[in-house]
Length: 511
Image 1: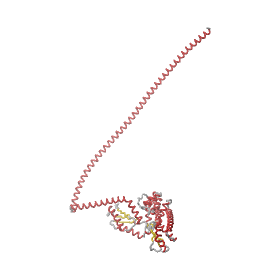
Image 2: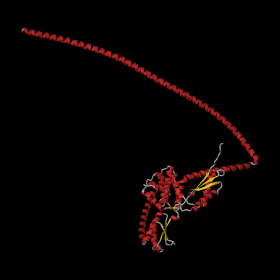
Image 3: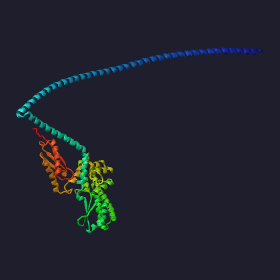
Image 4: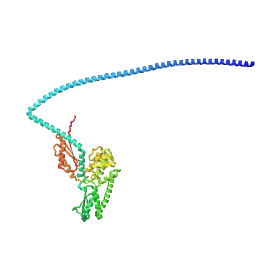
């Protein structure tokens, strides 16, 4: 083997050896450095753990101190609350003790008063015995006579008590039957006595000649029967020269019959078919005049915007009369009066005005509908969306419903003024005064009456009695006796209210 090759191999081996040795040395140094770094990291971690442990320990001590302070504060507050409650309990105990002492003192006072009352009762009994003995000595009455006097006194007391209870019972019965009684009286007054007089239930149609009576009657009375059947009124043919009388309670039907009769007399052709034709034409004319009259009334009264059905029903009052007073004119007059009164009193003028205009609306249809005209008119008004206050004025204007508004009272007053003023209705002044004087004479005939006044056109009489002669029970008996006397001795439409007034005044002067 050549020497160069051996040398190269030796150098290579020596280099490899040095390489291995150098790698081992380098690995040892790296390992030592890692161990040193790990020791430094462990020392640092240990130091950090010790520092963290100290911080945690310090935080724990601070938290424990804070919790302790909070607990001490709560304990202190609870001690204060307990002390406050203890003071309140002590105060309440003191209050209870004082009340107990006061109750004991009152009980002792009551016992003392009972003892004194017992002594006074005994003394009064002795005085009563002495009084009886003295009365027996002075009056020289026997025991039987004294008993009779005592029984008479007891009898008077029992009668007074019976009268008092009777008055209370009558008041209860009156309150319970008030609505029904007012309805019955209103219907009776409305349909049988005062609403329509004989002067307003007939119409007279003049005839051109007496021969027309026979043509109106017709063969075997067929024409007159056809006319009565078509119009619903009675055709009266009597000895009145050149005239035929139409009679009926419904003023619209009566007016329809009058217009139809006038047309038939003008036309000259009178037979059942022609009668039906003329009656239909007359009915249309009357309906048109009713509508026109209702519209004129609303304009005159200053009440625009009413429902057409309300206007038409109001116009029917054109042919309705009460004691000779036209009801449509009465309604307009009442509306104007109510508006003036409401303006003076500061009330609702529009409600009062409309209430006055429509207050007798039910009279236009009361022959067709059951009930009083006030309630019928109010129901019709509500059905056509009239203001609730106006409807109340209608239903309350005869006090069938208690007036609950100023406007309702104003409507009552305006209605009374329009209906009762002199000249409004067909009654002479002499008859008017005689009726009032007759009422006052009946009242003045009773003993104990000081003065009497007939008011509201004779619808009410107020009697002032002498208080020293008539007591409260006597006043009630007098009112009942006067009402019975008026019913027996006087003729009058509707009803009369009797009011007995007893007043006692005591007057002194300080000098």
